[in-house]
Every structure is written in C-alpha cells, then in structure tokens.
Length: 209
Image (tube, rainbow, N blue to C red; front, top):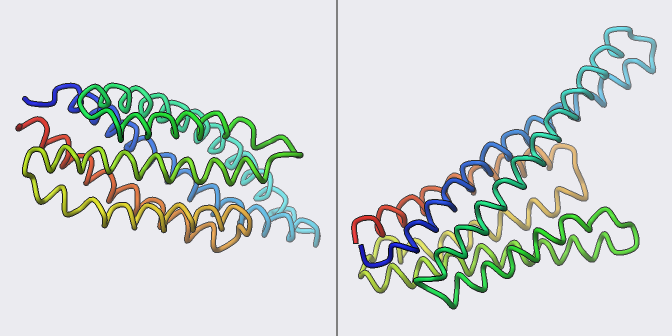
C-alpha cells in the first residue's frame, strides 16, 4: 500500500459521509413533518381537534429529528476532520486546505445563531463547506493520478460540480423552505450518495495500491 495514511483518512471520511446521508434523510423527514404540522395547525385554528393532535405530533417529530441531525452532524464533522488530517500525511497541500476549511465551517455553524452576524456567518460556512469538498476531491484526484487510476481521476470534476450545485440549492432552500426544502433534501441525499460512491472507489483504489 503506497498511501496508508490517505487510506485510513478516506475510510474516516467514508464513515462521515454515511452519517451525512442519514442526517439528510432526517432533514427530508423534518421538511415533510414541517408541512404537515403547518397544515395541522391551520386545521386546529379552524376548530379541528384532529388537526391540533396532528400539529403537536408533527412538532414533536420535528424536534426529535432536529436533535438527531445535530448530533449526527457533529459526529460526521469530527470524523471528517480526523480523516482529512490523517490523509494530509500522504497528500499535504489539498487535504490540509480541506482540513482548515472544515474547521472554519464547523466553528461558523456554532455562530450562525448570533443575530448580528448570522447571515454573514452562514455565507462563510457555505463557502467553507464547498471549499472543503473541492480540496478533498482535489486531494483524491492527486492520489489517483499518482496511482494512474483514470476512473477515479475522471470522476473528480463531475463530483465537484454535483456537490457545488447541491450545496447552493440547499443554501437557497434554507431561506425559502416549503416544497423547495423537500426538493433540496432529495437532491442532497442523491449528492451525498454519489459522493459516497466516489469516496468508496477512492478507498478501494488506495487499498489496492
């Protein structure tokens, strides 16, 4: 094995991406429950007892799923940071940049609730997240070229485009909600699955090197 550190690092990132897929699935559930809760609240306002019960149940479901998403997201971020740092021992420039931007995104995510700077921080987090993806993929692409693996290398730019589109759509959905939030969640899940396939191919490439 020519790049054992990169292999161990990518393994961690694969695990992080699997958690992100679960988290994205929960976000889809939250979006659906949010719409049903709103419908239930409207019915309750019109005097429907069933609507009131539905609104309460939906609200509890949203709360539970939101907590689960928060926990999974933190664990995924930790796995990602560990993986990027480990991988940087074999391919330092790109994975180190990805590590730095991943830290920026993680720290920023805790600051988005501050009213005075929330919108600015969200923009910074979105940009940092995109750059984390880009530099991670560039790091994998560099390793693929070193190993003469054209399959993984040829996928790199396609994955970058897919991930950027997915992240931009998710950012727009954060401000609009509703049906777009559901569409965004579905696109996010598809994007994560495609990225997971790419990461898995990269892991197998490194394992067989």
